[in-house]
Image 1 (tube, rainbow, N blue to C red):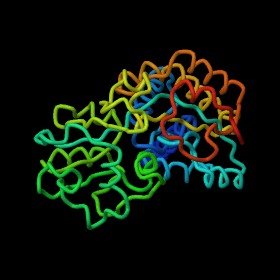
Image 2: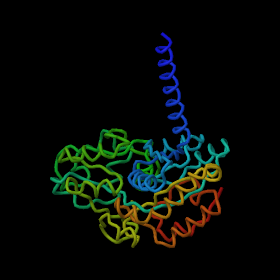
Image 3: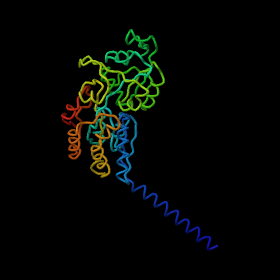
Image 4: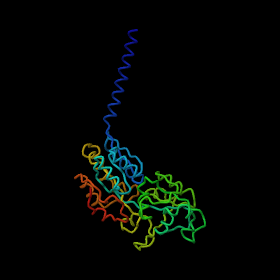
Length: 337
C-alpha cells in the first residue's frame, strides 16, 4: 500500500510541477496587443510574423475589428496599438482624454482605395467621382438600382453593391471622399468588415461593384478588374490605382494614408511594445511593398522614428479625414493634442 501511495504522491508532484512550469512560461511570455483596420492588417500581420521570429518570448497579436472597432478598444486602454485606415476622429480623441490615454500617431504607408468590378464587366472601364456619388449617396437607396442609371449607355441590369461595414475606416474615408460626409451612404448593399467576403461577392457576379484597399485588389487581380477614377477637381483624367500614381499624387481622391496609433504609456512602460513599434517603423517600407501598399519615402520613416523616440503625442488631422492629402503634405503637418 505504501508503495502505491508513494507512486501517487510522485505523480501528483510531477503534475503540479509541470502545471506550475506551464503557467510560469505563459506568464513570462510578453504580449503586444494590436487591433483595428482590416486594410492595415496584411501589413501588421506580416510585420508581427517577422518580429516574432526575431524576438522569441514576445507575441504580437493582430485583431481586425475595423478601424472604428479598434479605436473603441484602444481608447479604453485595452490594446497597445490601433491599426487605422483613417485618422483618429475628434470623438475618439475626446474618449481617449477622458480615459487618460495619450497616443502617438504614426503614418506607415499609403493606400490606393480601389473600386472593383467583375472580370466579365466589359463596360465600366472608368467612373467619375460624381457617378460614384450618384450610386453610393444615401438618396440612392432603392432608387439607383441599375447600371444604366449611372451612365445611360451601360446595361439595363441590376447593380449589386459590395462594401466595408460601418466600423471600417475604408467606409468612412470613401463616404467622405465621394459623398462629402463620413458615414453618409446608402444602406442597401452587402457590407462586411472582412475584405475577402467582398472579393468573393464581386467575383461571383457580372453585375457587381465594390471597393476596398489596394492590397486586396492586387492579391486577387486575376479575378477582379480595377475601375479607373476620374476626379473633376484635379483635371488629370481617369487614373488607375497604382504605386506610381499614388506617389505622383494623381490618384485622387481615393489615395489615403494608413496609420498605427501607439498608446504612449504602453510604449513607456512595456519594453516589448517599444521594441515592436521600432521594428514596425524600420520594416514598414519594405513590408508595405511586399503586401502591395505604397511605402513612404525613407525621410518620412526617419521622421516617424524621431517622433516615436521623442514620444510626441497628438494627431496632425484635427479629428477628421483630409481628402487628397499628399505624402509631402502629410509629413509636414504639425501635431495637435
